Amino acid sequence: MAETKKGGEKKGDAKADSKKTKKSGKATAFLVTAVLVFAAPFMMPTLVLLLAGLVPTYVALITDNDPQKSGALSVGALNFAGIVPFIIGLWEKGQTMPNAFAILSDANDWAVILGAAAMGQLVVYAVPQAIATMTLTHAEIRTKALRKNLDMLRESWGPEVGTTKPVDKLVQE
Picture 1: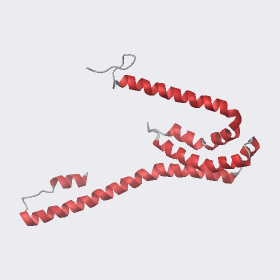
Picture 2 (picture 1 turned 90 degrees about the horizontal axis):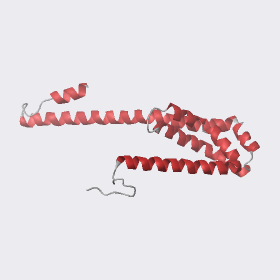
Picture 3 (picture 1 turned 60 degrees about the vertical axis):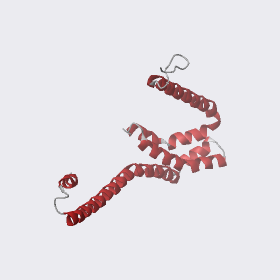
């Protein structure tokens, strides 16, 4: 008999787990929003710098069709890494709006921020292709070794021991 939790829900119930996740997600969103609302007056220059600098991440979030948003995560991580030095510089100079706008008006700063986001986009496009190439190369090497082993078996045990039909079908596809 299934054990029940507080509120009459069964342990391991998918609906109950989904409700918990939604509730915890809403609580987290509320907490983050509350912190930002209370911290905004004190951190406005930093927030302006972040909002402007993370535009490539917002675009990646909107255009990424993957349900897990892995491409947007890659772009966002490197985009954020490109902004961090400027945020630290803002904090060192003094967190004022003129200092934030001085950073945002410098073309070299934008080159670093957007270049970091571009590296994230490069990772999104290059890594899957590199993995596919390595996998294909590994499969070709393995196929070559299997053919060599099959030839050795035929030499030792005769031609009726092995057939190449399944291997040939695999290679042709």
